[in-house]
Image 1 (cartoon, helix red, strand yellow):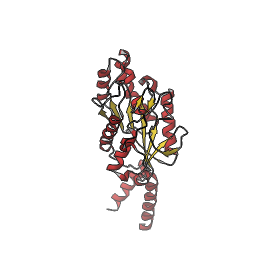
Image 2 (spheres, helix red, strand yellow):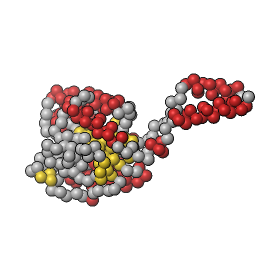
Image 3 (cartoon, helix red, strand yellow):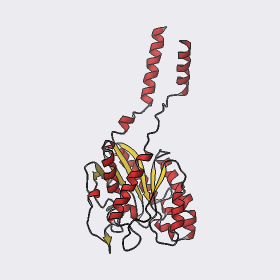
Image 4 (cartoon, one colour):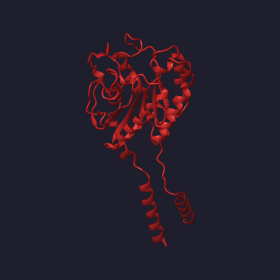
Length: 287
């Protein structure tokens, strides 16, 4: 009888161990970060008259621990401009991605390789990011390619968008609802319902409804959605785009927000409930 019980316990243990993924193994791959939104995420730092000055500050210089998923869906060492082959209709310069990544590595080198997935496109309205649209589908395609191209886990979405929605009152009025739906849809389609999102509250806008959009951004009430406030950061002469120095600072701000939402979720067994019930009953009988 004891041998039979022992065999059952061993079988149960084997079943549970195959059902619970190891967090250590999951984190050995890349820490994947999705960069999405519009021009201030893709980067216009150092761009004047459609020409990038080529200046890369120390905080944004390449690091072998930071990779970038290029337009061909292959990994390469990340370097500015991160969106040069993604946001192709405008000139790209420095964005927040490299400063963010270098700041995170300075604070926690144990995070391993950071894999950046640029997806931002300048001048885009939140309605253009709706589920089923080109931008949305492209983000999903690139995120899935990042997961399959060498392994890893998507750790966060960095989102900076909304300047285009300041132009029209109706767009501004509907912004909060549309943004919440976007976040919810992306999380659902990536099978990660509480995927951390760090959004940027606007520093500027191309229309009169900047404060209305900022209010909507700061009132988003979804789990694991945080914001950092870009208001007051230095702008380029166009009064719309962040300067290189401001992008460096924004990257640091995003890194500040990153650890506070990275607490790991508890690992739960997905073994059928009847096995748990049987196991509990077995223990009760042998008390």
